[in-house]
Image 1 (cartoon, one colour):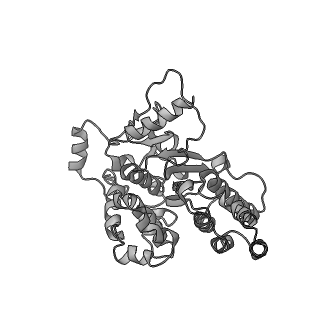
Image 2: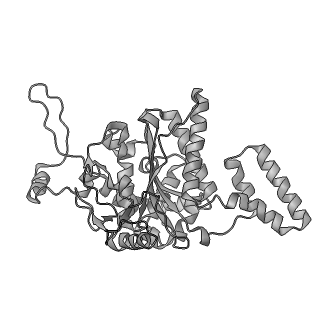
Length: 378
């Protein structure tokens, strides 16, 4: 199977990706202040480039993103007013004023082609996964290097990405995997206690909570079926955010309902640990003995909620994840393009190591499918 990044064909509709990138040598370089700047850059790029952040997790030496990339061919083109509104997110006043004067000159000349060419300089970068990740990593690198008076690369390699089927089961499973990273790494006991993740931010009261909630609402069945209803929340416009928090947007569940459903997927305290009989230390409340017995009777099958506490390589190295029909469809396209091995005749592979339901992967990972999280490298 080719190692080239797998993307959806133009005109195929919006696409979802799980993206991951690590710091060179996997050093711990992002602390509270750095994570705040990272998140600020992430949100500004989200608005400027139109690639939507469903959820995310910023760790000490890597990040996870669940991204929605709209179909560029169906998105409206930038006009001059929109461009001048967006430019201050990423550029200083000098450049913004320069572009404003250039647009005014083009408009006064009556040369519509000139104005369109100015807009296309920025338009061509929008709704593009590679551009979004490149800009994010470059801008974070520039900030970090200036802050620490260093030079050289900050990231160990290009980002990894896995193409995901745009259905609720696939997206909520991967979202939960991302939001549970700090729990697996031992940084917090509960996912809502980690402030630099989508779920943690959504559970807070800060300005970003409404945006984070909108991302999680967008991957519910209702949100996927009615994406236009959440558009105001995702862009931070209008009364959408308040409606998503205190009421119910047309066609969408409210945040309390979404949180309850998502929390059920996230939460599993783990197996109960008895305290040391001599010292009384080391104990931890967890799954009741009856539940442990139930798992044992099932022949050791790992429930999905428990599996999400582990590192699951499918989510970073599976290439494509979704239903068998979705994975087979991508495989057939790759096969037609000559990007599959000559002996391979089918695409979807059952995901092993836990009960992943109907989810399938393009790659059949034979070794180290699941394992314990390795600290901040989870």
